[in-house]
Length: 114
Image (tube, rainbow, N blue to C red; front, side, top):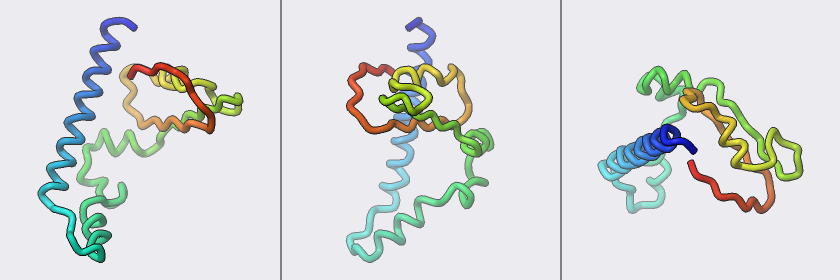
C-alpha cells in the first residue's frame, strides 16, 4: 500500500476512536440503572432510530446513511467477492456513503489491514 492510503486509514482509525470516546461520555453521563426493569427505558432514551435523530445529525452523515451499498462476500462464489480483502478494496478511497460488507459463512484466513 502506498503512503497516502496508510495515512487515510490512520485518520479513519482516529475518527473511530474519537467517536467511541464521545459515545462513552454520553453513556457515563447517564449511568445504567441498577434496576433491571429500567434498563430498556434508559437504552431507548439514549439510542434513537435514525428517522427520529436525523435532524440532530450532520447532513452529510444523514445523506451517507440513506442508501447504503451492501457488498456480499461468499467463499462459495455466490456473492460479489469471495474474499473480505477484495470487498474492502472495492470501496473507493474517499467514499462518503455507508458501505455494509456482509460476510457469508465459512472460515476466512486472511490478513486484513484497514
